[in-house]
Length: 134
Image (cartoon, rainbow, N blue to C red):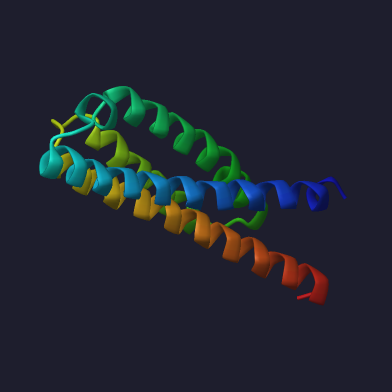
């Protein structure tokens, strides 16, 4: 019974993770255009603090939503894909600002987002099987 009440929360966290991943990718691309193309906003857009804070939020949301989902539906794929993405995002913090950082970050957020999507699909499949008795 408790799991049924908690499932909507986990789905919301997965959706928030997808939204956060998309916002991060847009931030990366916009930063490259604004800073290198127009020379504005470097102090704000390229601040390492933004990337660190984003990684903390992404890690927390993924840990709760995907970790919870992995325990619930016993599927490792969403967890492995998301953790690989978080590793890429962490690696992006270790390289200087520029195209290498953007590439690592975009790969990372795409994988984290894919992990959340897989998690949503697995939770939907598990709920269908539960209702149908399979």
